[in-house]
Every structure is written in structure tokens, then in C-alpha cells.
Length: 125
Image (cartoon, rainbow, N blue to C red; front, side, top):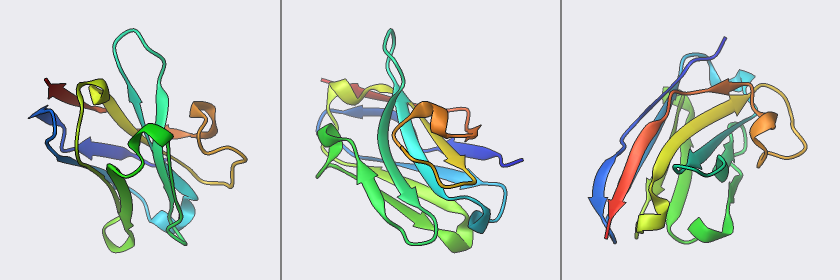
């Protein structure tokens, strides 16, 4: 069973940057895609970004395009989410997730089998 551990969250002022990390416990070749999701208080969990382990194809929700960058380091079994130009509406618990098969829609929460515990990102205005 894959275990995922996120790190890098914290408190930052609007306009600032953070880099989140998601370390996987197993060799990445077994996993098709890693996604980052976030959940703000009182809201549904939503897709943020995803990357495929093998090719490195990336996908983003519209509101973070141009500000967030997802990347992976296969040698370290780690996926990163670089977040720039952060805004108060980016405040949420950010979680990474992965799945070991090809899925039809990587933006869906239900597409993923394994989840990390999450890391809090708070952006002050």
C-alpha cells in the first residue's frame, strides 16, 4: 500500500510563495498519476493539479494556471507543487493522492486510491 506524506504548508502573505512536497513510500512506476487537491472550510474538496509519473504530463484547474507548477522527481519518489502569487482564496488543506491504474478523469476525488494526511496552507490578506 502506498503511503503519501505532504510537507511544506504554512502561513504566507498574499502574493507570497510556498512549495509543497508529496513523498511516496513506493516506487513510482507503479503509480499512474499524482494529484493535488485542496479543501477549504465548509467547501468540497477540489482538484488543483496533477502529473503523470512516466511522461510528466501536467494538468491544472483554471484558477491556478500560471501561478502553480506541479513537477515530479522520479528518483526521489516525490511530487512538488510550487505555488506563487498566493491569494487568500487559496487557503485550504492541501492533500496529494495517487492511483495505480489509468483513470478516465484525474480531476475526480474518487479516481484516487491513496491519500496523504494533508498540509495546511493559509494565505493572509
